[in-house]
Image (cartoon, rainbow, N blue to C red; front, side, top):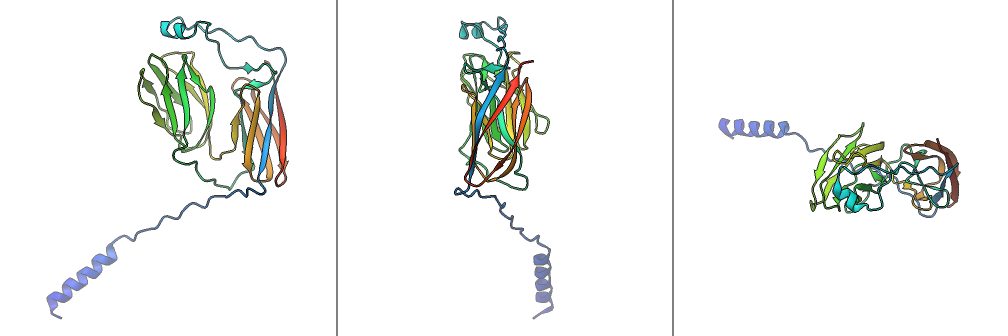
Length: 251
């Protein structure tokens, strides 16, 4: 080997040694729920006391909104159902899942919030942290969606009539994100961004159901935007189903 060849060989070795090694990223270790022992928490959220009268909103500033709501538009802060239960209550497992990381939802599984009739629908929704949230506008006018998180990046987006859906994510878990519309001051919504899939929102019968939960000891919280929060502790044996009843009183 000539001196010149030796020099090139040495340089090649040095170059190879100086290259950064490729670090193989380790796949997250997700907790897998055993379907044979999974449990269910179900129940209802009741309102105690005289049913509060819903306030009629002043929407005269926008003639299109008036036209879309010929019977008037009413605030949604306390929605008491016909059976004395509460709608729009966010119920979730607050404690008991620490140390467990659950698989993310499929990429195609999105959650939609619509701007329809000059209000946000649904009024209260839950998403997973990192899950795609689609924002649509079904009204014949321009709306605006402005979430105001504290743990995530704030964003503010107008959406004209016929505009394509917006897609956004909350990177970090956060309870509860207040949403407003800068165009129509009465429009409000709330979003719970969760690190696990164990949550539900009560509907027209005030009921909720949280399924496929591993057995264990849990704190379950029911959150209501005006009336506050209620908590209960529950111990779930394998393959069991437990009913919980939450009650809120009028202020």
